[in-house]
Image 1 (spheres, rainbow, N blue to C red):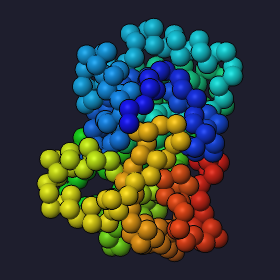
Image 2: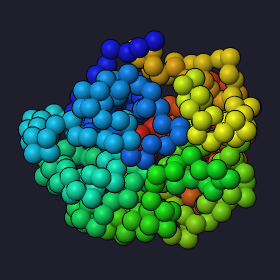
Image 3: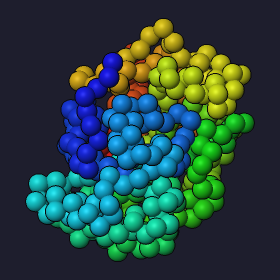
Image 4: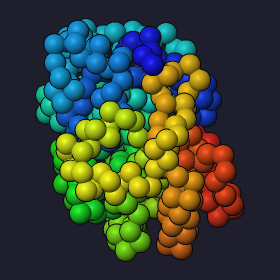
Length: 316
């Protein structure tokens, strides 16, 4: 099913999403250089339509408008004062390398810092430069920073991201400046990222760096994604992943968006991953939540005293 949604600079959050959609998405560009193997945005018709308009491909992201006009449009919309919480982003990454290198990401952060919003929630696999880091630190009440870190695996699904050590240093620096930092272990790929020793090693690294807040969530698949996985990582690893999924069953996450229909994990596979991660996070002293939208599905046995479920306030 193809959705009629189009990419716009600002889009209200959907009712079915995090904390009932009480925020707006900001999409400054279309596409993402990180081009991760499991990225759902690559398959959305709204994204592909915008890429076609801009004359580019997903791995070569371009701003929705000329940079000066883009920043002016963002400033003008936020100055209206009704948007209080922003999420960056649904279909791209603010810290995609080319827009960090050009200075556009820093200029955008300056606009957000000077706007009347209450909070900008940034989730990223990218590497902000010193300018971006200092802007967030100078306006720490305005920003939440959610870097993605995942366990080591025999095959990488994120081939175009900066080295772990560099991204860790950035996260630590941002936290030291007083910005709320919440690590996202998301999406957890079954068959690759559910090895206890590898998970424990990641958590030890996070704890050693003082990164003690974590949100975790599991992978959702689409049929086109499965086909691309076979091409990108080979049939053996793809089969290993698929063995944990109910390939004959799917669930539509958002009621009005047919393209949010995903192949879900088998209940026993999801239960095992949730139990593993929550146990290790608890044992090692983390403050953590499970994503309520993607992972806390019907039938999952969750003791909220030992595995809290996110209600949005955890990292906002």
